[in-house]
Amino acid sequence: MSLLVCPQNHMPLSPAEGALLAKLNRAISAGGVKNSGGRPVEGPWRGGLVRKDRLVVYPIVDDIPILLPEEAIALDSIDKTAGK
Image 1: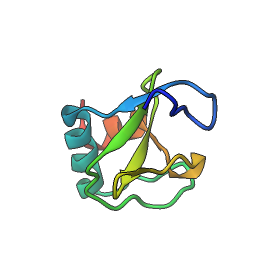
Image 2: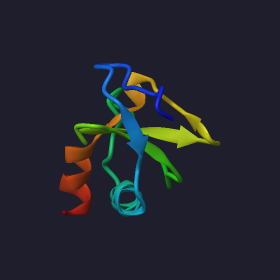
Image 3: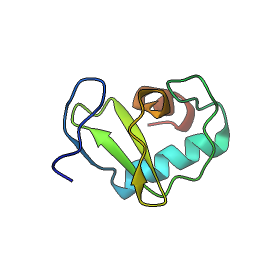
Image 4: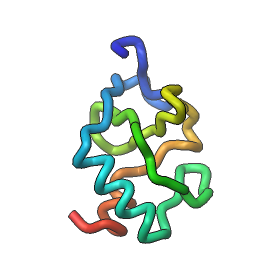
């Protein structure tokens, strides 16, 4: 896990905690969450990796981190959808 870094700025990534995943999944189920590539996000997410600055989260699908910039979700976008 210590080798995983953000593909955009090389900041370290860490596993998303349960509270963040719950908030993300509420926002996804409410609709309107899009990834950085502009596509609607479907869920629920079972795992994610959060960048050290806590600005973006990358999905983990079938235990595989998807570290593509266009798959990231800006965390401020879920604050607007799910509430703080």
